[in-house]
Length: 402
Figure 1 (tube, rainbow, N blue to C red):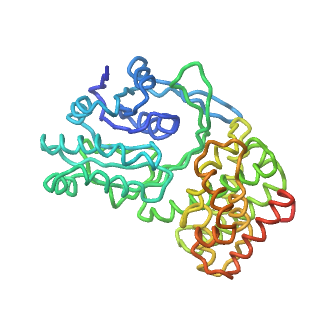
Figure 2 (cartoon, rainbow, N blue to C red):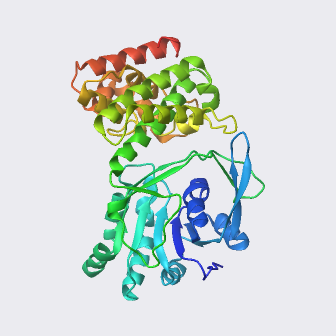
Figure 3 (cartoon, helix red, strand yellow):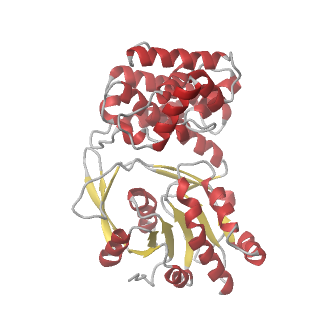
């Protein structure tokens, strides 16, 4: 049974997985909210309602534990309970469900909006904390499909839909308690200030940074942390390194990833005046140091999964390349990262995108697949570089060429 702490403002968080509990839910709890987790995992929801707290294990050289309290849970299919919670002093709704799941939570979020409209409640904010640019806009579009014209009008006036950038490594974690989660010490949660509504209660959320230039922070994170993580995983796979830690500790891989991130960093600093070269170089070094955290054992096959999503235009691999192309900047390291991604094919993988990518290359040939994914013209120098790097990597595996 869901029990609320009547003395605290309420945050409703969709997604009670490791990222939800280890990042956004933890930040909200530590900021003074009672956090209601909404999920389809019955064992997790039951445990939240029985224990009302869990341990957050900070994984670093001085590993320690922080207690997350004032939490409860509700099944995402339990619209009646969600309706009851909506009548409480809720000021923020967040998500960490995975971008592909956002359409599935539109119905319960729409129920919250309908209930607040019927009760003549004031504004709240919705922030989709997903690893996808403008994920909140995607969720908003799905919610609108669940509302009539009057409800959509209420939503426009009273619901703030704020896009954000989120950054924290939350690896798989084993514990006797199903709720406990392990996380790295570093995190950033940056939200578009201009999209937020003034709420009642209006709570300042410690741990959530707001900005007037959210796109810059989204791209910095995507083109640095996510880009570097992906390239490390793909080169690690080609070098038969099972974990990100072992991969980044390999000098040739560390050098290659660093080269790619310097290329993307030069483009980011050129694109966004909010960043400067010295600060961004420190950000790159922090990112590489995070990959080398000896207390985080993350498999390259997990980090590299869904390669077609990572090879979409504007995402972590092609996005920084396009920015380099815009300014005529070097991008050889990034192009090699694309080639490595095209070769990512773990044996007996259940990843549908791995199977699809492999099938595409076998059916159409590498060059045509590169043209389809990138939208570049045949004969473009970057197409030739990707094809050339692919053949080298396929023939000899990764070495110290860079």
